[in-house]
Image (cartoon, rainbow, N blue to C red; front, side, top):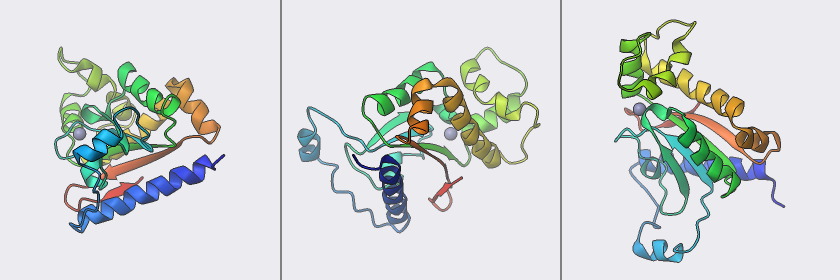
Length: 194
Ligand SMILES: [Zn+2]
C-alpha cells in the first residue's frame, strides 16, 4: 500500500515542475496524441483533480505541462462550488481515487470583479455564482485587490468542501487526499501555493 500523502506530494511536485517547463517555454508532455487516447480508451487513472476557473486563460493541462489522462479537471466560473461541482470532485476522490486535489484560483478573475461591483446585491442573473463568493466578503468588507480576493476565495473553497463534503473530509482525515490551494499569476505564468 503506497503512502498516499507522499504520493500526493510527489504528484504536486511533478505538476509544479511542469509549470516551470511552461514558464520556460519548454513543455515536455508528449501524451497529447490519438495513440495516447486509444491506450486509455477503456479506463482512466488521473493522479490529480483540478478545480479551475472556466477563464480561457487558465488551462490546467497547458500550464502544468500535462497530456491526456493525467488530470481530472472541473472547470467552473470563479471556482464557485455548488452541488454538481462538489459531486464532480467527490467522484474523482471516491471513484478514481485521486490522491491530490488542486484548487486553482487566478489573477484578474471576472467573477471576483463582478462580485466586487455587485456586493451585497443579488441580481436576477448569476445568483448561484455570487452566493459562492459573497461569504468571503461578508464580515471582512470589500477587497482593494481582486487578486487578493481570489486568493481568499480559494481558501474559502477548501473550507466549504471540508465542511460540506463527507467524502472529501474523510479522505483528507484518512490521509488519502491532499488538498493544495494554488494561485495562477497571468503575468508570470507561475502557479504558487497559498
Ligand atoms: Zn476566473
